[in-house]
Length: 184
View (cartoon, rainbow, N blue to C red):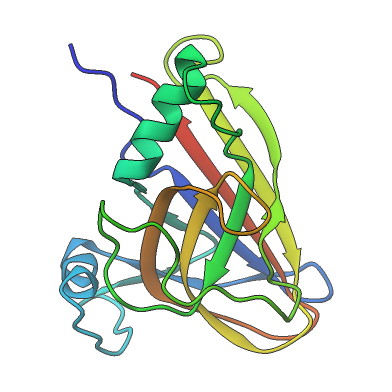
């Protein structure tokens, strides 16, 4: 048996307007994710590349440095800080296990890297999943295309990263991101 830090769709994005109404997000299908992975950008065409939904669900990619950092946290060797920060960006280069940072991290518009609410939830057995949740209060206009989990307010170790079709946010929106790491 091999321990894993991922589940099929373990990062959830939800976008709300200034009145708290849910805004539709494009949920990519496997073909569109494959195109993104190979840095091919095409329009968001429902039926062909996905569909519009109240949430966007995406599998994470745990980085090599993230795996080493999690091993350090597990046995206390190395003193790695807890992975409790969520960052977003506008980078479009496909996520890779060798990534150590987001490609283009956003540092303004209410979308700067921030500490998330950390908890444990149950996926298969009691408390087997680490969960991070952060609501970003947007104060500008951005096209968010990447997200990651890190262990520091600046710099730090990148545990996981993903790239996706744009989540277009405007001032007054709330972007809610929930990352889950299931230990199978």
